[in-house]
Length: 344
Image (cartoon, rainbow, N blue to C red; front, top):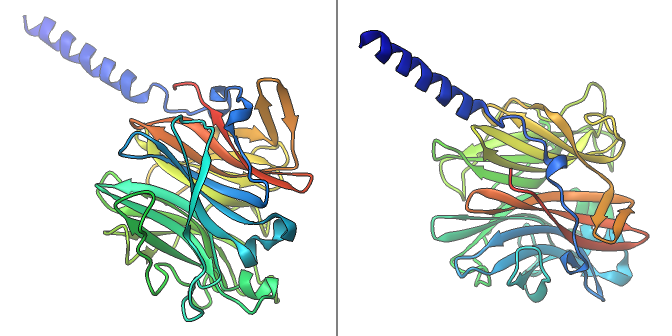
């Protein structure tokens, strides 16, 4: 009986190990499915960017996105962007614009002129909208170099949204984020804390500044204070601007991130979206299947090659990613798409 019991224990341990390790290597590229035209969100008079989706407590789907007047062209994201929300009854659209949620406000605030880079979450019964804000004198570089990270909170995706007088992540003198802090992405950790990965620009020759790097900050509360960590993330040798637009999440016992890979430094596929993984949210390496997507939209009517596929974010339902949302730039047009994913 003792021998049988030991064999049973060993078998159970083996099965648990198999269950735990099975599927640990995520291959998002293989999960991508064709999308229909209803999964394209475009506005006639506005450039559309930065789509961040979430399923509301009411069962509807909310897409927080950046927009600015179309006639000002793509670069006006730094001077005229505002965050709005669109709603759909289906996960992949079609979405309909509802309202602007973070408009311009008085010049005395750090985010007086621009709100951009939305990253939406619900923790408990409260929605948290992380974003980049800036102010400036109207010149592109002045606005770009005043980017800081903030959060707005609400009990309802449609608001009202409470904004704060100060950013939750500011720049740090002589650090990797000496000049700007932007592109926030947040995840709640298994230990109950909140991890943020974000982009910074170091000190350097003006107006661009120095090297573009990413760092991490951790808080006990979703509104901060966020304590900056020492690790530098998504680094590739001497490349000055290897990646941006991180989106992070926790799944299958690991942290994962999708980033824009500017030159194929991590995917060997040119401009693309790359997958990273981390055991702790601070030490990152390219995933075994690093390529998430080239700049190709897999329409049901046929693949379409576009100039840029950026700002990746996932839509989760019951803890499972069901769609990959991306911003598209192509021939002077900006819009968002929802790419369906197979269940992994």
